[in-house]
Image (cartoon, rainbow, N blue to C red; front, side):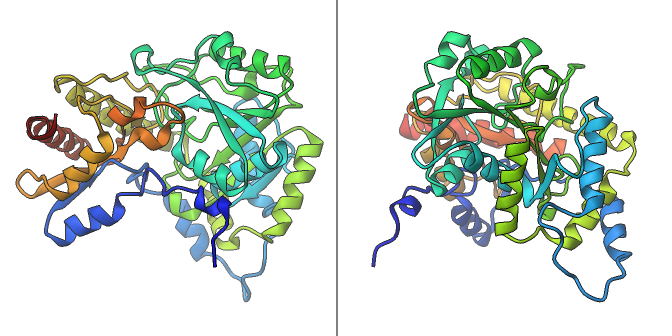
Length: 399
């Protein structure tokens, strides 16, 4: 019996594809520093587990398909405090992480065989998820030499064809760490309006912006309420990736009606996790300041260490907790696997995410890796020093 073409087109996640190799390295006694995945090690606020411990229910029943009222209200209050008002009854659906909200958004705006436009490089699971549901990605290039900035409208529009139905933007960017200006977002908006496209705004890293920059959300731009779909998540904001609570928000009534229909097809999101997630929105602003300061230290550490490696091209990350450098190698996939299988420095090595899976239609990513600075500063510096030593050995052997 054969498998479907749809599933055969779904690749392993570029972020996790080397996990079996890393596990084998650990069994052989190596210590592996994980820079491959954006899983924060910052402490989840006590409010989450305190709320769960305080649950007094005889039965853990299904939650409403659109989400429990407290988490819907808490999510909308969060945005209200930032100047954008969403109705918790009609303009938000709670999802199983931002991954499900993205899946819903894509299914709402595009039919089978149609496409959604995004940056090149992009978060690799965009491609994986879209292939699952029979939707394609179109891309426009952003370049490491230019700090992965949004290009001109003319360049963006080259990625649009008769089957394009929306533009998906991650801001701050996963995987590059770029933070887009109001002018860059305005260019996206103009392209969307002129070509009658939806805007899907993946802003789950909005709390992580550095160097005193002000984050500009698509929600701040007037005149796009009818085409804007906002993706949200507690995962990175509160260091609670395992809770799997996200949200889809929009002021477009037809979009929200469709989102609720999709939500009913999977019945409900975890009742227990929603209760804990609602409590997270009670944390003080000090929490965000402290976490942001910690990630800024890590950001500066990884950037400083990368600059010490000959032949590396790197744009200083401005937000999120990723950086995507170009290494002096021909095949970062081969290098990443070799790093786990054949190299160690005093019994230690590093797992990275080869960047080829973050690109489409180009070989640029074959020289790049995505690094997540989600471990402590000391270990980050040690990790990049290991990569520096590994490159010296690797280039002598293979380049």
